Image (cartoon, rainbow, N blue to C red; front, side, top):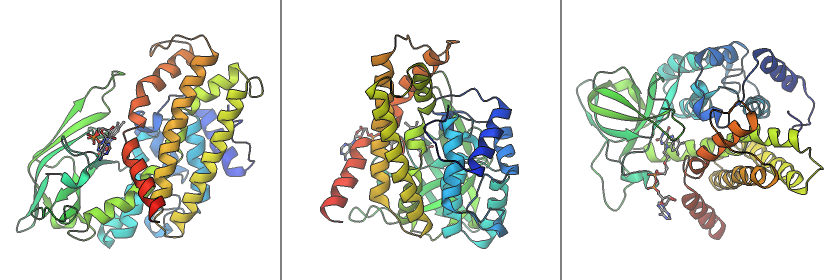
Length: 369
Ligand SMILES: Cc1cc2nc3c(=O)[nH]c(=O)nc-3n(C[C@H](O)[C@H](O)[C@H](O)COP(=O)(O)OP(=O)(O)OC[C@H]3O[C@@H](n4cnc5c(N)ncnc54)[C@H](O)[C@@H]3O)c2cc1C
């Protein structure tokens, strides 16, 4: 059901036809949990990964708005896009902005083909919201960097090829904790890198703990400038927080609700659809700002926070209006999707920046824009 996206368009129709042919079984949070390399390769063949990147790096040279159409439809269908999601959303733009020529030609075309997957290595056991407190170190060697430390909650590190890790490359200065951080692209098959799965409530193991024990990576692994990791990561977060996955993770459940209680039959459903349209407009505005080269951090934090609240409201509305017992193994789609949404609900208020942290950013931005 895609009635919430009424705009006509050839590209939208193409994506819908592609999805229909593949008989997707929708899942809530599929962009985070459903890892399917074959599906990613099929998207790559159609030019739907790296759509906005320059053609010389395998990209499609297309506007952000077209990418938005494709990812909205994929999310609305609950399609298995997790394999390439991080690389398409933020690693690629980071490489285009800060990467060396060698890094761009090595990684970007492979990402666009759906053959090169990245995991994000920011969080550590005692460093989530307070990211500047990370303790993973990288020390200079004759030929590169020796990395030691531990990353946690690393989505899909067990299946990805590379980890973009935030590391400390110089001794922390208590007055300037954000200084001395750098980003390294670490091949996850490097000796000294160990990935251990962490089982979550739904029984899946998309989370991992990554231990780096004297892992030697080459000089060419440094992304951007040594010591500029904080600024680079902060820029990445605008891409990470503003996309439609922040309010469409639970879309398959919303569609299921609308199927059983058509819009118009209850004002609560009408209110959800109206809110969805407002969030789409905000997210599209941010995509335009990113295309203009701006860094809309406050706006992105706003979309993420409103999106998490919206997702929770979908679950509450289903419970208000329908008699259904959530069960992850139910054959009934409504019961299954509700269970997925309930289990993942707390994650939406944490991943990509917790609710309290986002509201702090918004409050500071509003007081001193
Ligand atoms: C589904 C999911 C996927 C994830 N994937 C990845 C990934 O791929 N890579 C990665 O690096 N990380 C990942 N994370 C980790 C995520 O980035 C962290 O969970 C997040 O940054 C919060 O950090 P934390 O879990 O350490 O919680 P904490 O920072 O310990 O926060 C705990 C609670 O305290 C509150 N709090 C903390 N500081 C303050 C403060 N100053 N003021 C007010 N309240 C505060 C928070 O809002 C939160 O409610 C993922 C998390 C989830 C849930």
